[in-house]
Image 1 (spheres, rainbow, N blue to C red):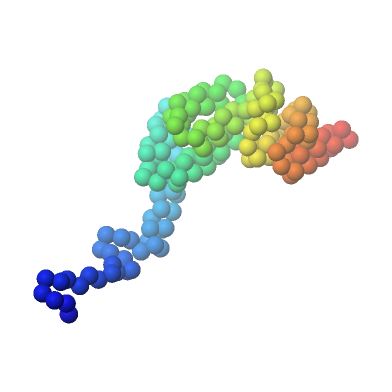
Image 2 (tube, rainbow, N blue to C red; image 1 turned 90 degrees about the vertical axis):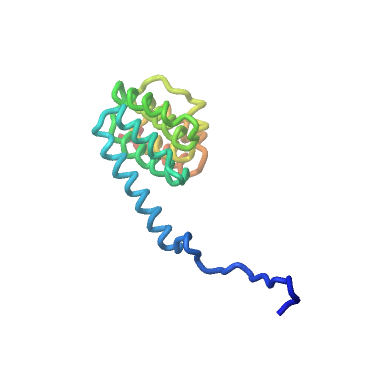
Length: 177
């Protein structure tokens, strides 16, 4: 014991406090929220573009921004692949672009989907933008019904070897068909 007026300090407990959740419970809760976000986003697609944009904005207000943005990007990938290039895709992309402002990762993914749809449709697209696109975007373009011009660009200057090889193989197959 110490002298009068001297208090013994104890080290904080390493165990969970009354307010902290055990790690496995926290992970389960996060997984549940992520799955719930994906379910809500999938259902929102049927609510029209404005309704979908509202749900995306709500998901992005989740307390875990990384998880929220991941759920939104998964939703963008699922929706964009089902939308044909043209007015429907453009209306959808414009509505979501406004909601994604300030969220770098999902905003970039939407820009890259817009580029991919333009390439696929044979609309105006930027060679510089495709050359500077992410590995994901270039890989997706090399596997899509991209025109020969886009495949030639990727075969010559894709960011990674697998993109260059995939684009070159597709060009070779087209040439021998």
